[in-house]
Amino acid sequence: MEPNYSKQADKFLKSQDAKTYARIKKAVAALPKGDICKMQGYKDLYRLKVGDFRILFKRIAREIFVTKIDNRGQVYR
Image 1: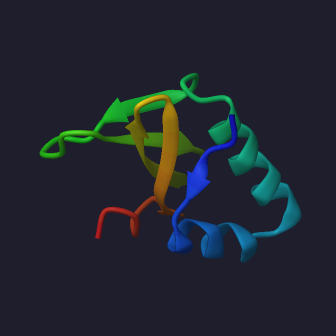
Image 2: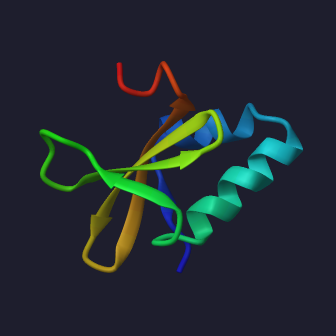
């Protein structure tokens, strides 16, 4: 099942080089495996670490919706 991406997440992915793009897509496709943590203060938001990148996503029923992808220091703003 292919995850859905927000406009911001899709734009960030397309701006990356091929190696980083493939690495992030592979990590998202492998969900629920990986370094995942539930975000405090949110009911259904999770964080996935991929090197210096952070991927915020929601699980809606059996689907995954990636809300934001950014560098480690910028994603939580």
